[in-house]
Image 1 (cartoon, rainbow, N blue to C red):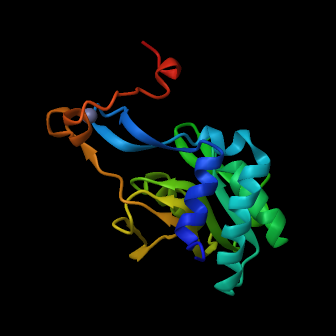
Image 2 (cartoon, rainbow, N blue to C red; image 1 turned 180 degrees about the vertical axis):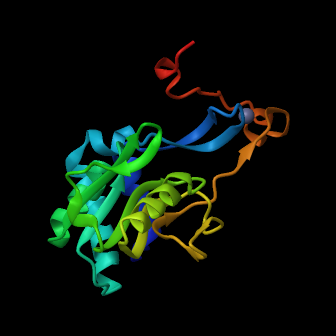
Length: 198
Ligand SMILES: [Zn+2]
């Protein structure tokens, strides 16, 4: 049986351990069956490249006209950069400068350009909205918004439109006392705990 796009992307994410299935405690304190470890994506460039190849095909099939791929720092830089390289486009990243998302002065070419935004994971759309604002301030046109994973499965719209994703996965988070995995006594893991400051 032919693998669907979703299966293909899921297996690539699992291959690089960026998507873990089990029983996890999220930073919110809620429990979930799925956990994304974004850092695993950029840790294994060869695995990331296979995912980016799928994203590039998706972008190419939309036949959009643009000059730049833009991503927010830091996690999505590698993703956007590799996408731009494969598409033969320019790349720029936005970052927080004095708390506010902005482009460094060196990215002057972004002014009045046409750009697509590439981000790793869509959760609330907060950082993508900030990139949209940055591009508008530079009078750039936004030709498309792409994410590897849409954790809201299309629920979050940006600029009134759903975001294009390789993988749309509705991640349910449960209060501990309503968690089906707790009820089944599945061992609970707290990923990334060693990263957090006490
Ligand atoms: Zn639980």
